[in-house]
Image 1 (cartoon, helix red, strand yellow):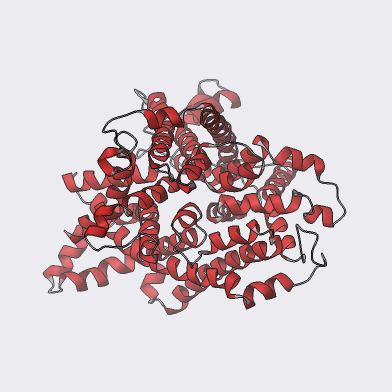
Image 2 (cartoon, rainbow, N blue to C red):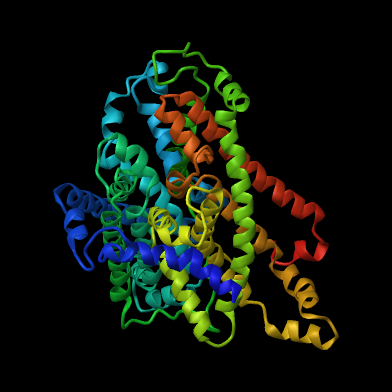
Length: 558
């Protein structure tokens, strides 16, 4: 019972109340009308309509580019013998952990007036004109979309044997016909990549609040933020914008379903044979290697160089300061509570959220993986899928609205403006993805192992600790670390729900940059990322050194 109360409180109530107010402001004391569409009329005025069109076009272009690059990466890693191909997987996961606003800020520090390139004596006028606009926004969102496309397509490609390609060649088909056959069979993965990247792009707030805002390019998520951040707060308009964002995502999922309807893509069978890797000659291997080096530089190298170099320049972005290369920004960040405090605060919030989310996600994943499609499992699956489809900024706006209603004050429950509400919102955004990470592992745990342990006299708790925990220990650690890293640098929820007097690291970075302290802000970025990497490395090292031998062996690949 307590489990369902928590799920409803953090996932259902805030979003449901927030979305209802778009149609009935009077129901929740936000106006005098019990049913109206005025909020949608305001949301679809000329300026906001341009923002929705811009978001849609950017989402489509980003989805197509990310799917193409993701397909190329997946094919190269799994079907060729390119030297160093394993490093590509590491790059993909590094991009997965890097928030979009940090990638955008890395580009901005390089190209902005009085930025890194200008300090180095390089004219950045032309690249700045290109990046500060739709082209730059598409580039950054494509960089963030590549990991999602790669994972969706590579998982599908991994299960495709070579017998279909052999059948085409036996019947006289050439390489082109064989490639067309493979691409057709990979349609579920390709369409999943397109839908996921489109949804991520139109709901992204990191780029909207940085590169898009600085280049005066209207997108829907920033319009939603402005509706909530205005005075007085326009909750009905913000809810109407949220409905339209959800409609865009639903249309993407509908297009995916429509494209795959009535077609069979079942390729796994007892006769499936693993495909042979294609041997690349010296010329092709060299060209592809160079292409991947260029991709790595554009996706990780350039933003990283922009952030690190900016953090080492005193007074970057202003006429004050010596503009010399030194460690003064880091000394200020580490020595000032106004700059160093947010990192400690976010680290604590991320650790608590990751711990609770991993524990709850284990329960959720077990329910979703349970044999038999129970009504409770179906309801939980529906709630979690709906939460995945909601942009983070919609969650944040929902929490602002729902937990600031007079109803809670009457019950003497005061959550608005507190760290507790921020934790609840973090938990709501982290739980669905953490559950999806664990559901595959929990699906492989057979009940017979627990039943055998119980037969031999062990209680339920001891049976779980001695049978299930060793099997899922490594996936649990991975899920905890992914959630920790995501929450540590989370932006939209932090931006809207940070309690007075306390700043998460992402808000601290934005505050420093808003004061034109580009050196201090980027130093905070670098320290936060290094801190996250240190936690990941320390956790895996501790697991390797301290975990029982059996825990380390289970799930390890050779």
